[in-house]
Picture 1 (cartoon, helix red, strand yellow):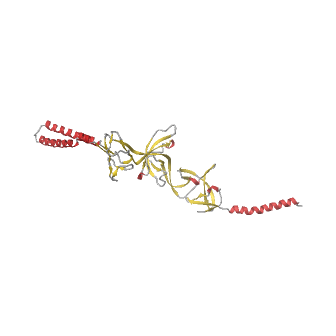
Picture 2 (tube, rainbow, N blue to C red):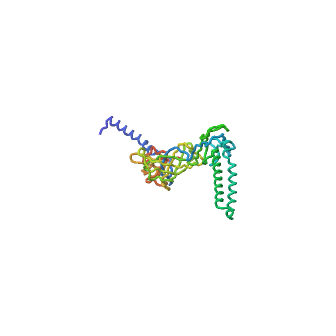
Picture 3 (cartoon, rainbow, N blue to C red):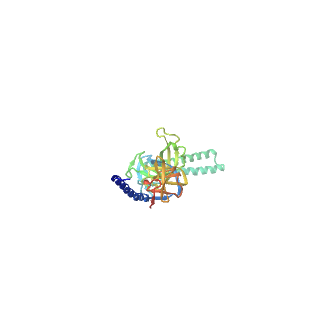
Length: 352
């Protein structure tokens, strides 16, 4: 059989291509993709609902004067200076004192106090005589009536005197303090101080309808704010509405936040996790390593230098992590970096 020039040339090309392809094939076979892995350890995970809202003070009040008088801002015993914005006050502490000599004279507190003492002495005397048969029951009753009237007059004078003081109705922080020159006359009904208590904060939120049978009063919550990246505050569900909004398909809830160290301020925007349940000693992995495609959800694990694609099933999940109920087990070597270019049975090289 004769071989012409064209056939000879084709044969040489095929042999050349075969020779070139063999080294490349070996290089591809030997190529290992660098990846980072973590050994799966059993841990815990919570099922949560994330929501956002604005926190408000649990107590707040605008204090006004009950009568007219000369304005005197009281001294803060903690600082030795007149009260100022941001100062803490105790329940019952006097913040503003009004002065009015004419009003004090009209009250006549000292005279009423003296009258009460006299009436008490007279009643004691009449009671002693009555016990000995020295006075009648009518005389004793008259002495008792005088005593009651004197006590009522004295208590009324004290009530009138108290109107000259503006006291804190609860422990809190001064959030507004309009300026008045000391000694100037202010009218009745003048706003002189705003007070808030935010050792506990209230957060109103809208919760998805599907969780209405899973959320109960007293469930724990976590609260975060962007100004406090390293601090997480805690609290609980305090109130729940049984009604579903037909427009938003949500129901209202009120959350009580324990504001330790007064780190949050009324009006701040926060993110909150309502904790529905918790599982311990389960397989938990970062959501970021999960690959989603038409076949479902999968991850890669490394076995003897080879990447294996594992189909996984989700359980509880939160913003960052997810529970794996099937497909992985403790001590599997999970690929956490470099998984993007992997295929099943790819050769890998583990790096830090």
